[in-house]
Length: 595
Image (cartoon, rainbow, N blue to C red; front, side):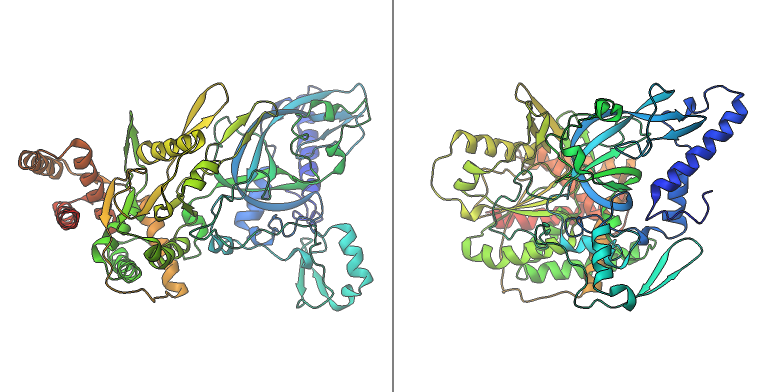
């Protein structure tokens, strides 16, 4: 283990090098003169375990500052940081000099862009590789998710504060007003309230908007408009990280203006081996993060509710509370609320050829501009508070003709240019079709319409790679508000909206948190059907098709999907006839309205 002289947050590279040199020296004594670091290629020599123990066993995660646009100018380079983002582009692998021999000592360049030591030429060295990912804040991420994992105030951490800002604090006399105590592990504790004169982010820093687009907002997916980060991952098998994954990266933050321009040093081997991504992603705008630990994030990672056993009795109580609130928001339309609950609990379970199992897109018909401005905004405001990612899209002729929905590959730069439909899994999209008026669609408008229809029907998005299209799997919840049944976006379930009152309801913070936990928990429950139950349901389906020749396989499949979600909504993992009959009753009431 590394001694207490190493500050794992303020000086992570010190701990990395110490573990490496110690392990390399031990390996050299055991190998009897053979190459001691050859076995380190693509493997961890103990540094990763050291940081994982600090972060997750010693409660060190809360001591690591969060890297975002608001504090980019505050954090000292080579500091340990956390960054949460979506993988927007996969930039391949980069080769670098991972280890070299300096006299009799082996040294490492891992987790850095440049060698911290002068590399003798020639010297014994090893060529290693790392994976490059361009990451951005998850599109449509709602503000409440940012509260789930707050970091410490960088301005209260001298060991992580940029040198020029530390000097400013000294000049302002802040050090005299701060009570700093060192413990045996090189960590600092601070007892001081913010006051005027403290360090602030410069006016040139970009602030991340804390709000989400309103119902009639514009296209917020302009490439390069949001804070991004170039993440470098080590010792990772291929395909563990996928495009559009949302991940928390913990690693060494680096910022070096020298990377923005080619080096004048012809002997700089490290720079020669680096991929030429710096042309499109200069470090003066895009920070680097050398990842030590990473983990994929699910909906549960954004919820602060204590871990409890999801018993059916507990889930039933929360279900009733949420359903009652949905009914009030929808103007006491109980049928619409029941269908909306099933919609919010749906997710893509499986793909069988071209059939997607588990999806349940919803179309509320009977809206106009006035009701959309009342019920639509109330509904979308609630959805924002319940799910991690959501967006509202104004489906007008102008929007369809001008929006960049499709991600495309720029073969000149080798970069993937984002589009509105490049989304993290589990995103909720609300389409306001009441804005649609008579007009003509351009070729781009037609293409955008087809993209949305394909997403609705197959949960796939075509990415444009110039010479060919590549279908990318998606898992997106889709809700459409329209005057009549939408012809542009053919939803799985069409429900005429019949409100009887205007909503004026607000939920408490604790209640809202319980609903988030309920939705995340129920969506993750496994689903099954006993053979006897499945046979009885199948017999009822055959009887229903005999009585109504208009019924098709797709509609019966939707009934089964709704019944499985209905069972899950009560905390049950197996479908019963009771839940099947509840869905059949919903269908009867829905069809009455459709007439």
